Length: 104
Image 1 (cartoon, helix red, strand yellow):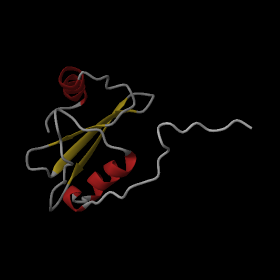
Image 2 (image 1 turned 180 degrees about the vertical axis):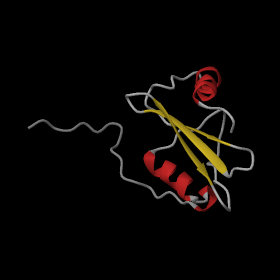
Image 3 (image 1 turned 45 degrees about the horizontal axis):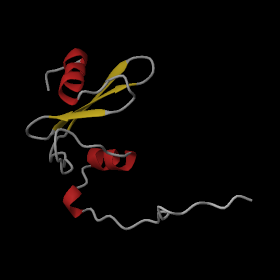
Image 4 (image 1 turned 180 degrees about the horizontal axis):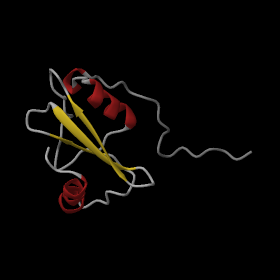
């Protein structure tokens, strides 16, 4: 957790082969999982958001590979300390692949 803008940008570019100025959030945590840094670009420059928990730890989602993509709700779960093992996803409606809307 000693790295700042330059070090975290290097990790994103070299480790993830991604652009830190893309508008995505890049989350980093320490080994004990009680500290979290989020690197992001807000159209005017890079910013770092840092959080240290007084007790407990961040529950990281299951990762297969080098990284995992989260949507906004999942980032909120991460920051609120929701345990990913207790989450249950319910099936949502989706259009069939062969569906084509009729033109009026």
